[in-house]
Image (cartoon, rainbow, N blue to C red; front, side, top):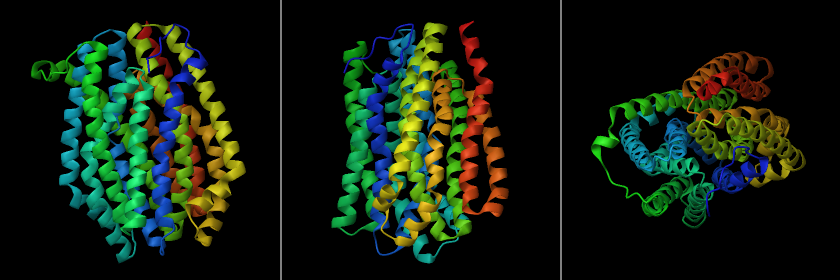
Length: 444
């Protein structure tokens, strides 16, 4: 699929056209979580569901902490594209793949520490602890493949080839689902099965698309990807990359910790609240991935406009993407309002978990339009590589969110967890809006 020719006036249709492939790929991502949760939720004990919820959330927090491998890649790639510096595109990819590999090895080496941390944080039964150990021992080995995939997705988003980035995610997600179903249903591997499904799918996808990307760059940019140590390890470029990546790292680890905090707070209320909030958070994740489609598609446009120094292109993209995101958030809320019971019933057939999930479903209905603003502003700041402001915004939001949640949960129990999460979304949008004028300085 050919890349879209960008004009000075970015229309809603242009943004929507770039976002449509991402909608489908982003739908595939939470489907993996839903299928894994569903597979565990239909086993004989809720301990399987709790173990996967805790360990998968924990590892996702760790992997997403290195989301700069995608986000930093998008901004740098799109700005290099705006400057028509195609050789630099290759060096950006190589730098981030090297970083991804190094980080992955550290994650694998520190696996025993990760397991120890989880054992200290969560007061669960011995059987649940053993199931958590089984999942992490396998899933952690997929780190090299999963982090390299971040870099590849960032590259294709940066050059506005959203169809290819979406195809990559769809293949990863669907193969993950198929392997997990086979291992759990046919081989009765329960927790081990869903971990193996992710492991195999990640490596098959990463290897396939690394090969494809090599030939894509040759054909599209007439550049042969070669490792040039002097160019790849250019100290000025590395310092810029480190600065961008560090800021995004701090921002992302705080964000992922905020969602992991929900699991922790739930555990203080009892194991059944870990289970029901794990179910409901899947609905929040589904809505976030839909809304992130606009953020992902505009990251490349924003970066391109910065590279071109076109303020008019930038402002039209900002305005129309925010309108589209909010409208979609309202639509998602309406769908949830009409079908939340059916969705919950698909995830689990344990009657107690169903009943309790219904009680708190109102929160996942109201969150999408509220959260649409912070999701979209994230994409705008990523494309502009305005990462220091993203970091500062997240620090302020998380500090307030964590502090309030501890007090609110004492007053209104599990409702407090969801009220705090909703407030967190509002804080993220408000603080990013405060820093917005900093981006406009790039065009002066």
